[in-house]
Amino acid sequence: MKPCHLIPRVAITLALAFFSASGPRAQQEKPERQKEDEVRGAPAEPDDATEVRAQIAAVEKLLPAYVDRGAALHFLAVARMHLGETREAMDLLKQCAALEEGFDPSGGTEFAGLRKERAFIEMVERIRSRFPAVAAARRAWVTEDKDLIPEGLAWDGNREVFYLGSLHQKKIVQIDLQSRASDFLRPEPERFLPILGIRMDPRDGTLWVDTWEERTGASQSEILHIAADGGVVARFAPPRGEQHGFNDLVVRKAGDIFTTDSLANRVFRLDPASRAFSPLHLHRELFYPNGIALADDDRTIFIADSLGVLKYDTVSSTSSDVAPGPHNTLAGADGLYWYRNSLIAIQNGIGAPRIAAHKLARDEASVSKVTILEFRTPFMALPTTGAIRGSDFYFIANSQIDNLNGDKILDVTLLEPVRIGVIHLP
Image (tube, rainbow, N blue to C red; front, side):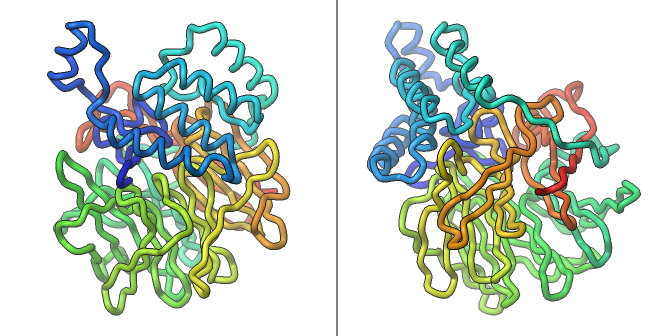
């Protein structure tokens, strides 16, 4: 996210092993200069300190009038902790916790340095008393292939199969209702980047897929159009030399594609006919845009970032923040889906991940009711995205992204079958 971006979901430097999806980019190893400073006893800042401080300034500017104060406070606490400013981070966490929005700082690793402090322990105890665990999901199926490291999930109602994308194997598998899996899109003979968001085309049953790979000093991203038989219809890449991280997408009936770009901190519209990418002009800066949902009216788009959800009208080209309502937050939604005037969100950027249904008011400007569907249970570990089939929500319960660094599995002994959970929607 430029000028200050957050860690990508593909875990280029084992980021999710160190920080949640709402924290600054982590570094797998300390640079030599930082090691030398620590040996001398001088406090060393991370290499991205300038970016993070600019990010802090931007959020602090939003804070006084922002619709979700708790989300902004949590964001700032993570950033301060990343800079080693533990006292400031703890003060921000206390302010966030007092708002009782559901943030649980013990659920991630970004505040590991505070876990032994009595004030932190007492704060977490109060949070967990106010927001107890919710276990409503059941297992739908598990995959035999342990090293998929899955990201995107989509439901094809015509063929009655799910499509599950793989970051590690860079392919898509299809799974029928009898839990039988087979390869749908394989990286042979063509080469594909890691698979992220997958959405169905409402017009013809084809698939649109976000792909993204980031390496040191370079980033590649591409949108794929895949036929119902798994053949590649077209590939769409932004101009060379630009840095992009396409994450999730939606497809309108008119045929245009809207994708979040977590590296450029933008949302882009793709016109497949002209092959042109054009950025949306929103009312505020985005902070790691991730999940995205399209309303049934086919004109209203909801965009999730680390601070909440924005509503964008494709006809008027206007945007606004959706107010989460008291004691609730829309922050940190990885997967975001529209269902009967509700936003179904997989929120893994609020500490302990949760799945929640946010019922919108009639004008869709605010949340009138929140129903927590799954929260802080052993069944979920780094959940990412999902898909709606009828009135059931299927989701990736254990993505295992924290065990992936680039193309390499860090510890094969820790791999386990991928769990796909299902929850009945209210």
